[in-house]
Length: 166
Length: 160
Ligand code: SF4
Image (cartoon, rainbow over all chains, first blue to last red; front, side, top):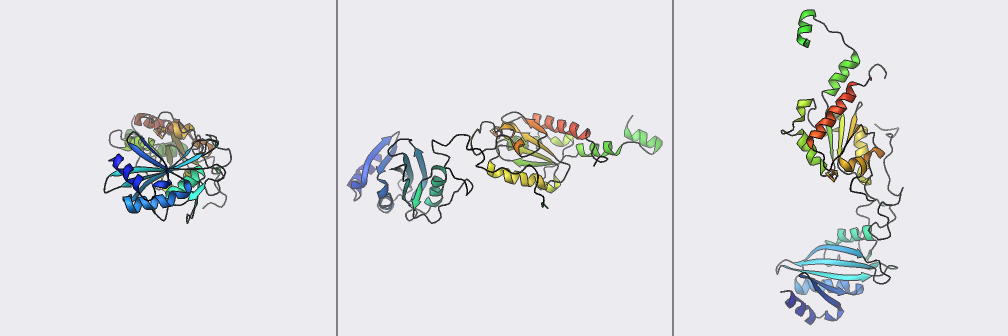
């Protein structure tokens, strides 16, 4: 079934946008350039029925080139197929287009990727941090972030209750 | 000699105010369950029918901080959550006591990461720490008895 899907994708009208196809442990990944991500996602949804975006995850490879990998895990409910779309962005400009126009579910996933890894999604309507406080300056899933954090960057409550507490 | 016998004979009883209030306080602990992670499951077992903490003079769990006097922080506290925990602690009326249940609440435990407060004693006055991951309900009962011993030794009324 996986091979059929690959064959079909290779014959599709966006096959020239696909850089690489990987298959490991029964999981299939297609790699695309970050500027093509919306076009490829749109075609996969409309022509191949991948209607469900399960998750967006990010990897920090900590390499000079192609430092951050962004992976979109998508599902075709009708055919019970899963597919992963991978793309890479550079360290000095970690940004790519948002896929919210294709899958609305991407909204919070992209906020998480921004919060944790510092990937910017162009065209995202509300790219705020989702877990950490708004004024936090770092992206803790990046490799250079110390595991125990940077002292003083996250606020702790005062030991004494506020004077005007009622 | 039982209390009833003494009262039946004389009709009155001499004691200290402190002794009386501390005795009453120690035997009617109303815990505030601050269940934040897996330890909360053991905390529920501690109050449930099998371990039945009511035998030791601790009544129902109170989910309103204004009705509770013992806060059991069960689980790891993130920096974000610590503000809520502190706020609830501030809402509890005095006198009040605090237990750090489990490795995480006591020291951060295995969550040695940027987002978790490495021990709730950094912002709460903790009376007792319970080691374990998670601690057994028996040890929570034991801690409750330790707190009761502490309460019985307090001299609050006359010195306040
Ligand atoms: S001490 Fe263990 S059981 Fe308790 S909250 Fe931490 S990880 Fe969970």
